[in-house]
Length: 242
Image (cartoon, rainbow, N blue to C red; front, side, top):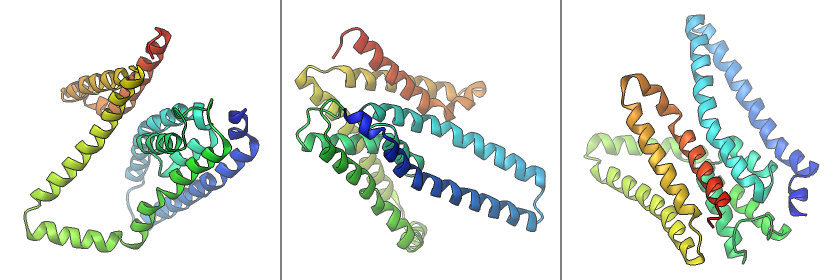
């Protein structure tokens, strides 16, 4: 069975190597930062509070990452999605890229039922090599790009930049929603139900976060909206909705 191979020991070992490397690198930087703070005579209590608050705001976004791993584990196993989302992965990118590869390879959907080793390797190549472009750009050209960008913003009005960014974001969201409407051709309503429930949940939490006593909910709104969407998908399937 495909999932037995995708969740095999060798796959966990392959995925563990980059994850351990990132954990070691993060630990080294954290120790160096702490030592630099001590050297600069920064108050230890302030440093401890900074560490605790940073840890708290790291855990919250990790809930969404965990959801992404769970969502993809049924079709790609646990090791590879877990590895991808440990450092530069995101559920919207991983799911979309994997689904595009699966459908381009002739599969009706991103499902372990139809998955083959060749298609699995193709998905891994696209989701790993495809994301390296942004990482390499940050290493090689981000500093120079930021300098030019800041000079441009300071010298002239940046309305066009904001308009282009907003248009790009709306286009990306429209693509996701459009693909869900495309599923209607095959009699599938689950995607639209998930979008509707998630959007409604996000709108409710956004409204609550504007109230004085519910500002804390802003940090949890995205993760809770994702949970609501997943719950809606489960309920829809239990009710026989395709």
